[in-house]
Every structure is written in C-alpha cells, then in structure tokens.
Length: 153
Image 1 (tube, rainbow, N blue to C red):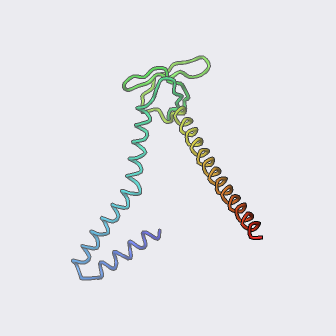
Image 2: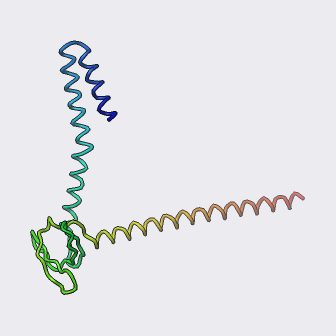
C-alpha cells in the first residue's frame, strides 16, 4: 500500500515539473519501474518454481514414491517418454499418468530432508568440538597461570 502511495506521489511530482515533457518522462520512468518490480516479485519466482518442477519430473526413477496433483499416492513402476505407470494401494492397481500430473516426489523429498538434517547435525558437532577446544585452551592457560604463580612464590 505504501509502495503505491509513493509511486503516485512520484508521478504527481514528475507531472508538475517541467510541463508536458516532464510528465511524459515521469510516466515512462514509472512504467519501467513498475515492470521491473513486477518481474522480480512475480515472474522470476514463478519461472524458478516451474524449472524446479520440470527437473523433478524429469528425474523420476523406478521405485520412487510420488503424489499426483489429484492426490493419488503411488510407486513408479514404469517410465516412458511422456507418461509413467504407477502402482497404488494394497491390491497393486496400476495407473498410467502423464508426467505433468506428478506433484511431489516423496522419495527425493525425504532424502533431501535427511541430507539437510545430517548437515545440520554435522554443523552442530563441529561447533561443539570448536567450543570444547576453546575450553581446553582456556583450561591450559589457567593451569599455566597457576604454575607461574607457584614459581613466583
């Protein structure tokens, strides 16, 4: 809301400047600025999301557990160029789906979560090890100070 108010004030100042030429220049600058903001706030993130979805769909492998856009959960048993065959339920019903209908690759998502958790755990261990080494250095320096006091006495 504040952004629109600022843009309106900017356009009014540009229009009130140097007559008709200033008004046209201000309007052009305002339009370019608006298009730039729209690109970075809406178009770019959408393209990034589409690219990630396309990569996920093209990297499907046999044995991956997926969820379709309709909410069907199944395991991939066959992969073709434009479609896949999944197996669902206890009775192992097979369904043929288009690749674009795949919403989530549960197997890859779980794998990614495990990798992230392992990385976090490694970072915590490294941080704890570093803190322990600092405490050891502090203890050694305290011991050295005590030894110096004894020597002085």
